[in-house]
Figure (tube, rainbow, N blue to C red):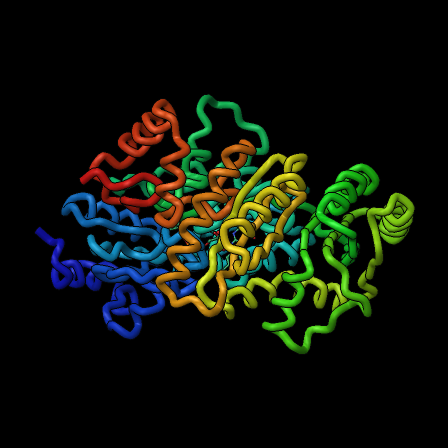
Length: 475
Ligand SMILES: Cc1cc2nc3c(=O)[nH]c(=O)nc-3n(C[C@H](O)[C@H](O)[C@H](O)COP(=O)(O)OP(=O)(O)OC[C@H]3O[C@@H](n4cnc5c(N)ncnc54)[C@H](O)[C@@H]3O)c2cc1C
């Protein structure tokens, strides 16, 4: 039996060399604590394979000896999936050394990569060939393609390019028993029966370890325009969205709702960040259009502003005149996330609704939260072009930690019950992990649960891989 750390360490060191195993308690810290510092796990050890074959060998060993394991990418996930379990120590298999760009085919508009490639490095590699990989998110300097696949990541450009599900053409996966499923196809059309790769996308590492992916590229945008638009309220923001989709020739690539309170949080995190307006407005929209051909984007935006102003949807607007100005506008969106972190304990959610219900939901949910806890601050922003709201809550600062946790737990239950009433989803893009498991299970009917459990049992009957994420452990 090789499940004790010493024997496992010997096996891993022999196969991977000294740099392939992490066992020093100080070095282990960054693999066991999540991005937000909310969760801390207990690993058996951390293995750092460099090739698919090494991953397969480690997994086969774990399968043979009943050793629980969990895959880890850039560790930016927000639902506690990548940290090792605190009660049943797992071998963390970090993909950070599987980081080769395998091939770029600019005519086929595809890139083939190791799963440990950091998202930004894939975007950079695509740019060198006059292409873009259009997944963009705040954590792109750290998150990895394998993590993006496994969480079905979304981000800022989903309304134009879709989520990871729409961007993956092929996958290579090490199954929980150590077999390698190689489907690194670079085909834009492929109707050979079941689309097995889709099972691994969004599976949060519960069905196998992704080691490679073939991703769709788009032509590199030759022109981009970014604007921050002040609007009277959320209803106007949604009306403007409908107009922008129709009048921007499908070139709209981002449409983010940012209420004033979010701007204030961004300024708290980055006091040097300038307010682009002299006047304070209640709600803003950050939008972007991008084109790869010769299109007059300025005329397009001006037309949208004029129409929006006449229709009472637009109060004011700033169109970035340079890349640096555009970057400063995007900084507002990025830094407000940091501002929330600085406020300490808070509730982060990631809900999806039909876009047409968003306005009504926004007001009903805000009223419901205020009725339960008037001092709690609602910070609701997000990718409204995808019907995705981060309806977050900052509890009163004067409560102690335990009281904050209890309050947020109750408010979350009330919020999710409303999401249900509106036929929405409690996870638009972050996934279930361990954090959302109870709410997720409450929303499954018997047939759905049977199908979920059947899929897990087919791939991982011994529950050794990422057990306890999405579904609870049964053993
Ligand atoms: C500031 C910030 C902004 C963010 N913005 C967005 C956003 O706009 N949109 C969005 O969708 N998400 C966002 N996220 C969440 C996060 O970045 C994504 O979920 C991302 O896809 C996680 O990738 P990762 O490599 O960090 O995965 P990790 O956190 O390491 O892992 C996430 C899950 O995937 C599994 N996993 C990781 N690698 C593999 C693999 N190779 N094979 C199998 N399973 C694996 C893990 O076990 C875990 O369950 C944000 C996070 C932060 C911190």
